[in-house]
Each structure stands twice: as structure tokens, then as C-alpha cells.
Length: 178
Image 1 (tube, one colour):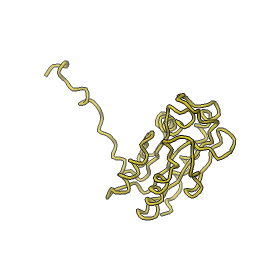
Image 2: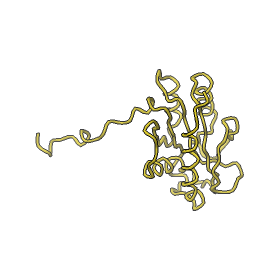
Image 3: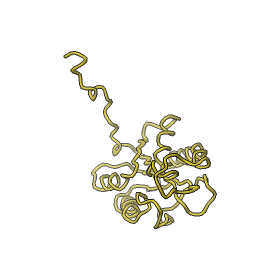
């Protein structure tokens, strides 16, 4: 077979088996809705920064976090810890990074693709309570969520990448609680 007949997919590495990782860090959000794209941008930042233990998988779930969580809930194998990274609006200073408890996730967010909608919150609670998975949420306060398509993070949210990486790496280093 000559190079013109070779399938480029043959050169791709096998995808990571994320369900077999001890910890899975999931970035969620819509990159076309301003600061809501923090989660996917964070996963890229953390992968490029390096220093993530081999036992940790990184996943940019984009707007498909519900499917990922549903698949994990039904799977026989799953990570022992899931860390969700997302941008939310809870009235803090724009760019502030913090951990939020599952019960503290706002029920309503202006973005229809939000991980904060009830089905996703329920899936996270199901993973924690029924599947024995430790679930933690690292959040950044948005500056704003635009009412129309507008890609790119605001300056304060983009500047929060390093602080978010510190928080997530601290979460990864903590002993598992479940």
C-alpha cells in the first residue's frame, strides 16, 4: 500500500480508557458562549501545562457532559473520583476560582447547555451516592455570559487558568474520601 492509499486514522493513538483512570477531570461548557467555554479551555491548558499524574484522565466534554456521566453511571468500570470544571455565575468576583458542593450548584444558568441543569446534577449525585465515586466541582465565576454566540473568555476568566490548575491539582492530590 502506498502513502496515498494509507488511512490517516491508522496513525492516531488509541484513545485513553478514561473509565479506567483513578481520577477523571471533566471540563464542560460551550466554547461559543464566552466564559461558559472555561471548562474545555481549562482541559487544554492543563494538558499543555503537564504535571498531571498518569492515574488522571482529562476530558473536554464540551456540551456533552450528560452523556459522559450517564455512560459512566452505567459502566461496570469507572473512575474513583470525578472532578468537574465549569464556569458559573453565583455573584462572586469575575475570575474567582472556588470549589462548590453539588448541593450548592445553581439550578438555573442562562446557558441551555449548562452542566447545572437538573439531569446533570442528578447524574453527579447518582455517581456519588449509588456508584461510590467521589465527585468534586471546581468552578470559576464568569464575568458575563453573552446572549448571542461569542467565542472567547473574558480577561478575568482567562487569567484564572493557573489558579484553577492549582485547585484541581490539590483536589487530585487529596486522599479519596469514598
